Amino acid sequence: MDKRSKWMLGIVFGTIAIVWAIMIPMMLMNRSAEKFAAPLFEHSVPAGGTVLQSQTKQGWLDGWSGGICTNAVLLLECDLDQAALETFYSDTEYPPARSGDTVELTVRPLDDASLQALQQAGQLEEDGQYWFIYLYSSAQ
Image (cartoon, rainbow, N blue to C red; front, side, top):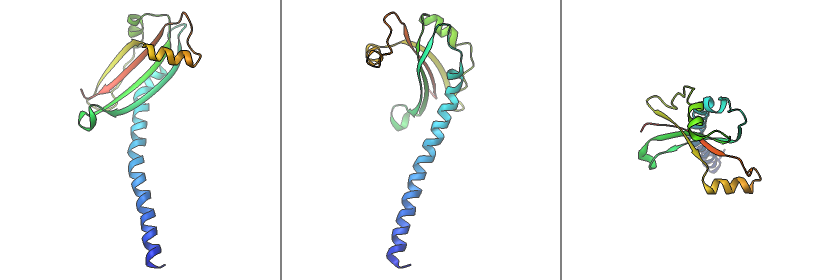
């Protein structure tokens, strides 16, 4: 093998190593976020309620210096009010995503932009009540 081939082979292996060095932490973060979200996503749904979407996300608070925040979100169609939903989902222990984090459960009605997105997707019922169920884990 000549010098040029060895050099090109080194560049290829170096590029692969850099890509894996970036992907492995991202895969571990995704796995951590999914594990954190599991109790919320596996929680029963109120009678007559429907989960339209669920999502997890892990990212940095306030840029790189703010620490890591993990959240899980349910988009729920349900006739219960905010207080009843908070009580319903508060019956479960939600372990933090990382040791030392605090966990917060919040229920919020959908904003206008989210309602418009549901309408465009053909999932908005005229008399339905729609809620976001948020579960946060962060060091704050």
